[in-house]
Structure formats: C-alpha cells, structure tokens
Amino acid sequence: MKNIFLSIVLLLTVSISWSQRSQIIAYIDMEYILENVPEYLEAQNTLDEKVVKWRQKLDKEARYIEVLKTDLANEKAILTKDLIEEKEEEISLKQDELRRLESLYFGPKGDMFLLRKQLVKPIQDQVYNAIQTISARKKYDFVFDKSSDLVMLYSNKKYDISDLVLGTIDRTRLVDKKNAKKLEKSAPKEPTEKQKQALVKKEAIVAKKLSDRELKKKALEDRKKVLLEKREEKRELLRKKKEALKKKKEALKKEKEDAKKEKENQDNNN
View 1 (cartoon, rainbow, N blue to C red):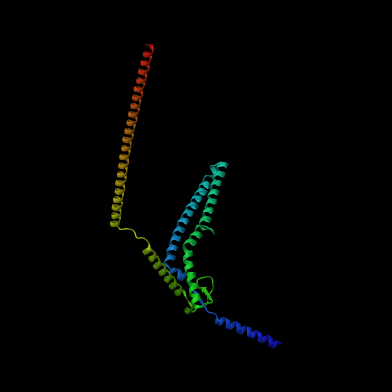
View 2: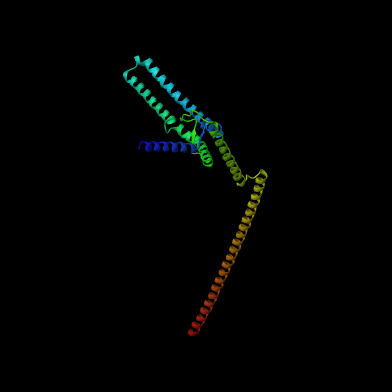
C-alpha cells in the first residue's frame, strides 16, 4: 500500500513537472513599451500639464485658507464671539471646498482618472491587442509584465517580447495611416482657386440666364395682361354700342307705335 502511494505521488510529480516544461512563457516590460510609443508620451504630457494646473489651483486655495487662519489667530483677541464664529465658519467652508476639489480632480472617479482613461487607455488597448496577436501566433501560454508587481528574480532576455509588441504596434500604425491616406484620396478634394473662380463664373452665368429667363417670362406675362385688358375694353365698348343700338331701336319702335296710336285716335275723332 505504501509503495502504491509513493508511486502515485511520483507519477503526479513527474506529470506536473512535464506539464510545466511544456508550457511556453514570455514576458514584456510595459514601461519600456509605453515609453517608445509616441502617442503615449503625448498623452502623458497632456495629462501632466493638466495635473500641474490642478495642483496649482489646489495650492492657491490651500494658501488662502492658511492666510485666513493666520488673520483669525492675529485678530482673535479683538474680535467678538460672533465674528470669530463667522470667520471659523468661512474657513470650514473653504476647507470643505478644497476637499471637494481634491476629490473632483484626483478622486477614484475624478477628472484625472477620466482623462487618463480617455488618453491612455486606447494606447494600452493597442499594446494588449498586439500581445494577444503575438501570443496567438507564438502559442504562448502566459505573458507576464516585468514592470508590474510581479517579482521576477531572473529573466532570460530571449523570452522578452517587448520589441515584438512595439513592432506589431508600428505595423498597425502604418496600416492605419495607409487606410487613412486611401480615405483621404477617395474623399472629394478641395477645389483649387482657379476651379473656385471658374465655378463662381459658371454660377454667375447660370444666374444671369435664369434672371434673363425670368425677365422674359415677366415681360411676356405683362404683354399678355395688356392684350387681355385691351380685349376686355373692346368687348366692353362693343357691348355698350349694342346696348345703345338696342335702346335706339326700341325708342324708334316706340315712336312709331305712338305715332300710329295718335293717328288712330285722330281718325276716330273725325
């Protein structure tokens, strides 16, 4: 039974040792990689500039609070209790505001965290994508970061893939630039000054043609309107003549009838 137990332990030890030997491990130096990525350096400089401005503002507020405290200490002997409480309340409010600003700038979800995420995270994602691409191609089981908290008592340079990661990032950047240039070429180009002048002239000619066409159209409409008015005047004149002629005929007819009646009356009287 004892021999069987020892055999099992030995077998497990050999299996573990064999599995460890069959695993492929590599490491990177994240600090080295990021220091050689231009976009990361630019992002870090932008972040550092913001941090300096925030620190200056916080230092200014802190100095102002110290001045208030000094003034209160110097004047405390001649101030009333109400004035002392008022100044202490002002100092307390300023201190609360200072703590609020510190949290706003450097808190867990403050401006520094958000800006770092905005500027640095896309670059870190490039690094991680490059690591995944290399690991899949080289079939690495583990990739460690030498610059992290992981303690590496010894590291063989031949397992350092930091330069491979940088090379992958550079190739990706070149591909992106080529694609951007293709898009730029395919995009409509800005017309030259000569083309702009020609376009302006063409637009002026088209506008003039449209204007001339509108003027001709208006002149034709005005002429048509005048003709219609003249025709209407002739019709009205003709209508009046017809009415006058009709009235004249009716008047003559009436005169004849009146004369006839008068004659008949005379004949009857005789």
